Image 1 (cartoon, rainbow, N blue to C red):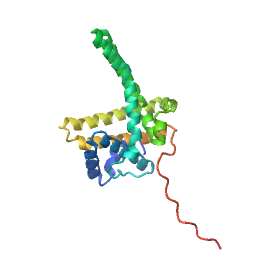
Image 2 (cartoon, one colour):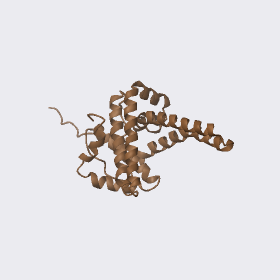
Image 3 (tube, one colour):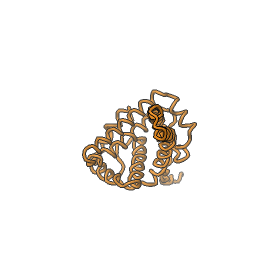
Image 4 (cartoon, rainbow, N blue to C red):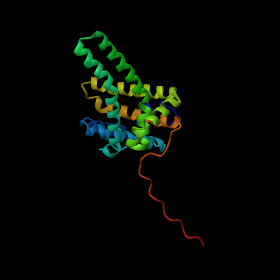
Length: 218
């Protein structure tokens, strides 16, 4: 991937992008199972991008590739929401405007922090599965090694979320396309981030089959 901006254009360089986005988008409408499948589809797209192929994966139920990222992201999101939820509960119990305002500020700060860490979380999960996704020290080190790259990648990940949201506004019909397209953008961003962060390594993908044996020497 030449630049992080390629994340937005490369999905359309696949001649079959309309069919692939449509089918994966329909799968993505299935609660939980569809989301896991689309996460897996995104991980497979990182495979393609790293191999230099500007080709969307075949749409399908890629559950094995997506389950780790789904679980990792859900756990991180829950943990980051705990302080805000506790403050909101206390504010409601005490009818406190001050606590309610504090909950909003804490929620905003933690949301920004999670966005900053998101590219590293996805990249480490892509590389090492569950273990990588919960490697807090490694994720923090990768995110803070070059904060500018993490901020850029985090902002573009947020932009992808906004694009997906536009599909929901269009009576949810547009989400069939914008949902997987947003995942494709994130895959491109993560590929770029992994390349510039200096943490590029082998992903948990099946190894290539061995080639034919060499001919006998005279």
